[in-house]
Length: 317
Ligand code: DON
Image 1 (spheres, rainbow, N blue to C red):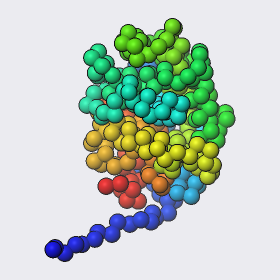
Image 2 (image 1 turned 30 degrees about the vertical axis):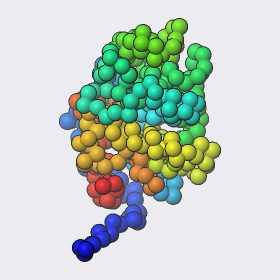
Image 3 (image 1 turned 135 degrees about the vertical axis):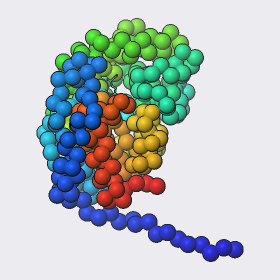
């Protein structure tokens, strides 16, 4: 027998304060200079590179936000979490994952990885996300409306809508996404007579949110799909486990492994500059700054998350 030493990991979190969030935000205010605003979707290129916001929903559901808290930006890839939830709620996990993998990736978000020979790698890269949205039942815009309704529910914000100009911009220039859509149609993964299901994907990416909305989304998945105000209408620990595990392995695309090493929390980025983080059974974090690194992740957003995680010992590992 050998002596066992128990390393006591702190189970209580120091109280998050607005002044601490402000301090972290100010420290990273100029980090935008190390990245670049996405312009492959032309309309996104118009964003103010300096806009920055930081929001936390605490364990008890209290919202603390600093910076440009009213600044709206498009949710982009973070919408893939909600689409996954809606699709799995309707079809069941097995039916969704018969058509795609649970794999991580060493490829960028818009890569055709595995598509030619088989199924999309996971539901968080574009290919798998386009497929996920296509699996949601309903004609025309119905699938998109379900995603929008769920985001409005989670954030308790009925004013949330999508940006028509970003949507049009994505639709006009999203030829890679269109290519993936048709490859999956060709292989029978997607059943569609027109491009409405692809348009629903473009629309979901164009939904406008704030950092606070993202923190509420993070909180929702961190708490078995319980809303920040305690509402349990969609409570489901199977879904939250599924979504968080995918966030951990693929939410930051090919940077996910290194990110897991440094931050150690399920997170999802979007090219609009947002990142949502779930601190399991604790809190939700939402950050925003549109200047991105080469993986498509917000530079200042990542730094703010890392600083918060280190300050409050939030890393799961
Ligand atoms: O389809 C696209 O390329 C965008 N609507 C979403 C990509 C995205 O947000 C990748 N995330 N970092």
